[in-house]
Image (cartoon, rainbow, N blue to C red):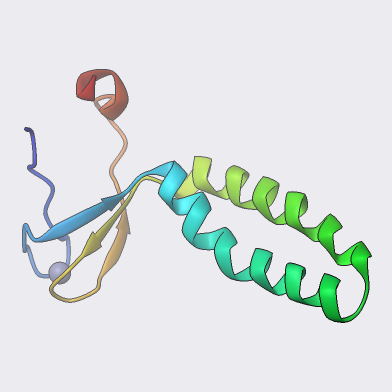
Length: 90
Ligand SMILES: [Zn+2]
C-alpha cells in the first residue's frame, strides 16, 4: 500500500501520516473547547472564535499537512511535496 514513508530523523518506518483533515481536527480541538468553555462561563460571543480557529487551521493545513509523525522519536516533519499523494492514493 505504498507505505514507504520514513522518519527523517531516525530513519524509522514506524511513522504516522497526519492528513490535512486530521491536522485541522487536532489543531482545532483545544481552542474550540476553550471557546465553548468561555462562551458558557463568560460570554456567548466567544463562539465567534470557533469558525475563526477552524478557518485558520484550515489555511495552516494547506501549508503544513500532510505531516509525518514518527512513533519512535516523536519527530514531526512535513511530508515532502512531489508526486501527488492524493491522486495516487485513490
Ligand atoms: Zn524518528
